[in-house]
Every structure is written in structure tokens, then in C-alpha cells.
Image (cartoon, rainbow, N blue to C red; front, side, top):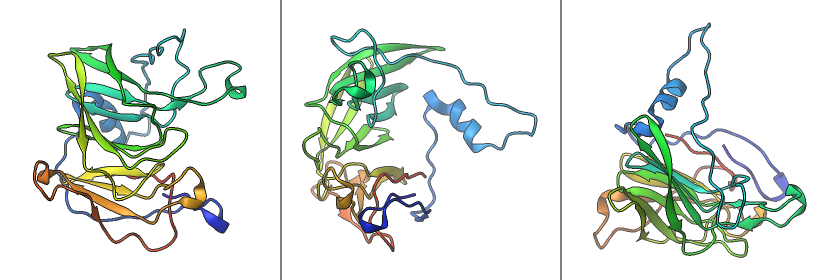
Length: 239
């Protein structure tokens, strides 16, 4: 799906890009929920929602109002939520938006879940793209409230040390926020987004990073042919 910039305003459509057959299996933490989404439900069936946890407050806060646009993914049965933006002060919608740098980790322990402190990002960051990989949650681009970045890094949960390790990855071909990414057959695909903070900078870009080349000299983003049609931002991707 896409959001269009320029004179066309906002619009929606559906684009399918075939990148091959994927043998990926869902992460264990969200396996049950994903199975519900993939399998048709009987006519008399219903979905029951259960609250697993509440996002813990950041430093200096009494409660966490939630965050928009964080980097989110699963690594080693731990849900990692990093950065994002919110309105931590009240009245909620009459205060200044704040970009966050906290990393929260929800670790699965048997049949229960517990929050762990994951440290902080190098700086406040939100509205980038993220995907879960066997090596960690890869975080791409985003903005800090002042500029859009091309930085890429991974967040890796080290359960034995009880900490999140941050590893640098090759930078994007250009600044990108409000785009979306997906993992298919060991390759990350990042589509659309914005090069600045306004919708008139929506991108007509389609980039790929082959994770099998990690550690090699040619481990870098590849610029692929983009889709037909208009630039896109606030798009959704899925595999």
C-alpha cells in the first residue's frame, strides 16, 4: 500500500513484488498470533486478546503513554522495542512531541514474560524501518525530529549478559524515514519513505541488502528498479 505526495494527495493501492519462495518460520514469541492470522477461522470462531505486558515508563516518567514509530522486532525469544516518539506530558495533545532513545526488551521465560532494560540508542530516533533476522533486529533510517538519517544498525539480544548489543550495518543509499521493509529469502527489501520530514519528499526507491554477504567486501545495499507509478511513503510491506 502507499501514501502519495505532491498534488495527488493521499491514496491507496496494492503492489505485489515477487522475490522468490521463502522458507522462513515465525518467531516463537508470536507464533500463536501469527497462526491465527494465517489460518482461516471457522464461522463460529472468535479471537481472544490477552494483555501480555504494559510498556514500562522511561526514565523520569510515572507512566508510559506508548510510542509511535519505534523500531520493533524479535530476537532470541525477546521482543525489542527501541526509540519512537510520543507526547509524554499532559494534556497529551497540547504538548510538544518528544523523540525517545530508550530500548525496552520483553523477554519470554517459559510461559511468562518479563521486561529487561536494554539500554539506549545513540540518540533519539523514530519512524524508521525494522525487520527481525536470525542475527538481530535490523533498524533502517528514521528521523530524530530534526533530520532524516541513512544509518542502519542491528539490535541483538544477549540473554546471558542481559543486554542489547548494537552493531553497525551498511548505510542506506540515501536518507529514509517512513518507509517499510521486509525480509525474504535472506534479503532485506526496503521500499519507499521520505528523504526529509515532509511528504513532498516521498521516495521512488527500492533497495535490497543480501544478508548472506555479511562480513564480505560487497556487503552493501543494492539499488533495484522501483515500482511503476508514483512515489510512496507511509507504505506497508509484508512477505
